[in-house]
Length: 176
Ligand SMILES: [Zn+2]
Image (cartoon, rainbow, N blue to C red; front, side, top):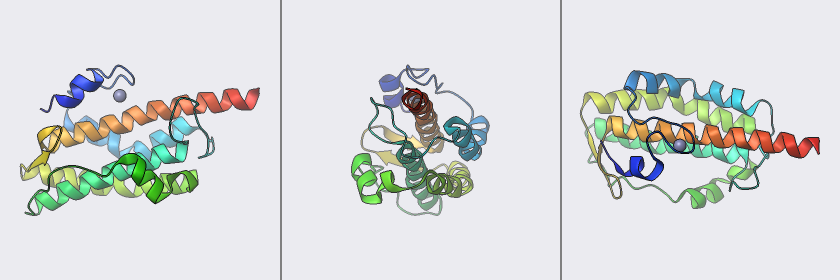
């Protein structure tokens, strides 16, 4: 599999503890649970809650993960259906955040967006895995579906860790 992300984050990830060699069934189960997982981690804090060391508010992290799944799902679905796989780059995440106005979206809207992509993403992954698509990526090299899935679930896991830090910082600020 692609080693670029493993070298960058560590295995397990030095920050969030994600292990890079899990099987697809376990990863797909995590994807389908993501909206509930995030809702549990957020524990009722508003979408505007922030951590002083993190770039984005809570809503923005949820929307970033949703858009990441959507972008990669589109490309897996397209390639699985026989389309020519594009070079697997993606928009700059900070520019996308500004264009999509992540910071202004209420947390329930962000969670709706996340929930709406989970089952379609899993369907796209399964189609891509079944058809053995190869997706060129300018940094990570050629990826097969499991590489994409592992990277996407890491993104979701890593930002759940960020959201947990935001919740702690928000509670501490509210208590002082
Ligand atoms: Zn991580």
